[in-house]
Length: 136
Image (cartoon, rainbow, N blue to C red; front, side, top):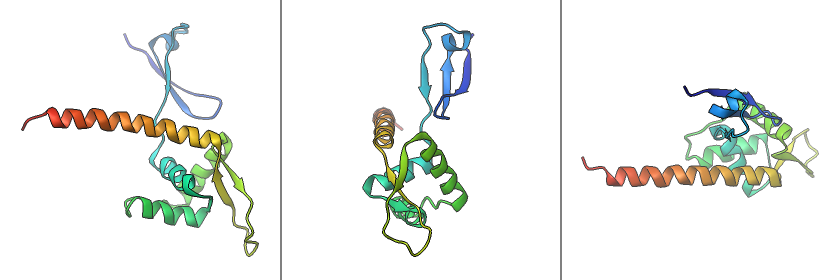
C-alpha cells in the first residue's frame, strides 16, 4: 500500500512525502511540489530587474502575452510568502513620492527559479517525445 503524506517544511512549502517517510523510515524521499503559476511569473519578472507591485502586475501580464493577470490579493499574498521564504527581499528605491515597495530576487530565489526551469524542461522534453511518437 502506498502512503503519501503532505507536510509543510520550515520554509512553509508543502512537501509530498512518499512511502517510507510516511512510516518514519530513513529511506524517505521527499520532493517539493512545483511552484504555483503566480509565483513562477513573479520570480521570472524579478529575474530581469527589481519591480514594485504595480510594475510586477503589468510585467507578468506582458510576459504571459496577456494570459495571466494577477489580482492584487494573489500578488501580495505571493510576495508575502516569497519574502518569508527569503526568495525575494526589498530593494532600495529613490522614489519617495509614495510608500512604494521595490522587490528584488535573492540568490535563493534565483536558485528556486532555476530548479523550476529544470523541472519544466524535463516535462517539456518528455511531453514532446510522447507526442512526436504518437501516431493518430
